Image 1 (cartoon, rainbow, N blue to C red):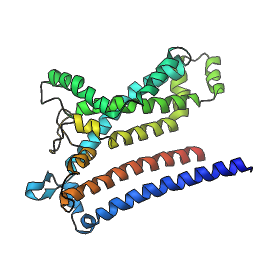
Image 2 (cartoon, rainbow, N blue to C red):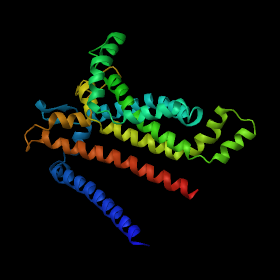
Image 3 (cartoon, rainbow, N blue to C red):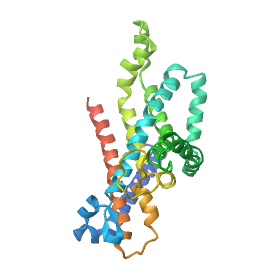
Length: 284
């Protein structure tokens, strides 16, 4: 290897070590500060009981449920739209309108999250309130719709890139056999692109779980266990933002580190799934 290759390899190796070290340091920091709860027999209470500090209950079960409900609903709403946009960009019109649509999608990734939240409050919340005639409109559905719009560019970019990785010989073979565009997409493009699509889905879910502002601004921040998508809910990230000003020595404050560990675990599980699916595909 020449000097340039050695230098580049050293830089990338150093960046990887620094990133991994920082991530592990953050995890260690949260574990240390949550140590009194982890060793004090309070962890199961926090994972199973409701949040009621006045009665000495600091359970996070409703925040966990709110986070999962909103993230899964956002993923469910955004997936078909993202898949359709990716199909249009990568298969139907990759040179014409699709070229401009991908630029719009790339632009959407640069929009600050607070803009999505503000737009949701001004436009979406009143619509949800008037359509369903229940509550204030600040609910799981409103937050999930805005989160779905937020994460859709991530999925579209991953899906489109995965579609581009399909060997042209496969596509030409379908054309030679007289296959339609839909058959080409369903029987060739989708099976070949599953790994990249799974990566986009998991990373989008992680982003939905980790978003703070949209959940804080639109979900309603109710600590009660949600019973429907029209109920208000509080997510783990919103809980961290709302409790951060509490007394440092209180159990209430220490719950934010349990929230951080839970979010870290969920995101880490997603990354492991991505790596596992990649290894499994490579082995095959």
